[in-house]
Image (cartoon, rainbow, N blue to C red):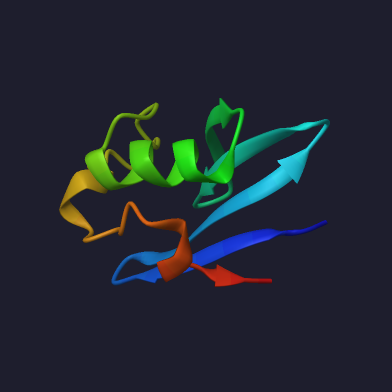
Length: 73
């Protein structure tokens, strides 16, 4: 698996390649499927995703919308 990781104060958020799409994953939950890592990062930064079951608003975590600020793993 390949993808991107960004460490927030509440734990890491991931953008991972799965079945030809990019999944945004936080706290083990998929919060959306995207055509590109850039689109996933942009939605995560703005909090425009499904809400994690913990109720955390991703927009409050300081997630950058630029994929170049995420760690490649």
